[in-house]
Image 1 (spheres, helix red, strand yellow):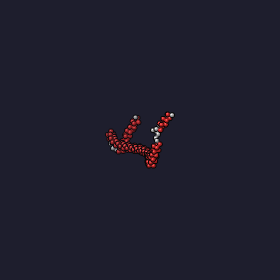
Image 2 (cartoon, rainbow, N blue to C red):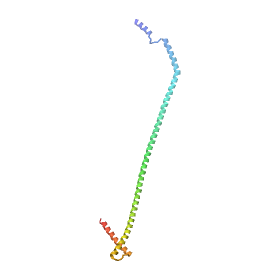
Image 3 (cartoon, rainbow, N blue to C red):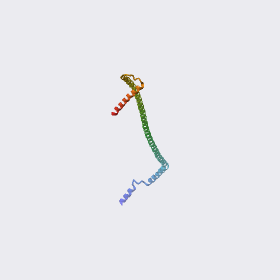
Image 4 (cartoon, helix red, strand yellow):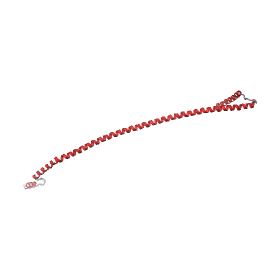
Length: 184
């Protein structure tokens, strides 16, 4: 029994269990403080938290909208850049084609002018050759007539006779030249 009395005495003196009047006063004070906090402070805290939540959600929505707009702008920029690169390539190709056509045209014009110059040169050479042949024929004819007149001892001043003699002589020279040319 002694142990039970000792145990009951120690239980009444337990420092962890407060006395009943203190417990009631503490609970009343807690209820007053809790009621004051619930009526005055909690609505303000909830209001601030709600404003922060709305600001955060609005900021996220705004950021998402800005990001979507930035993505659209980036896509538009990429499309414009691709179009610009395509246009540059097309213009470069057109310029190369025009350059090639211009070069071909200039070559054809140069070829045509060269052929005209060559034809004109050949015509001039042919005209000069004929004029030189006529002059040579006249000079050779005159010299041949003088020489023949000296050899024969009579004058061969008759123009018709002189012309026939010269033509026969020159034709003979032409035949000799043609035969020599053919034998080569």
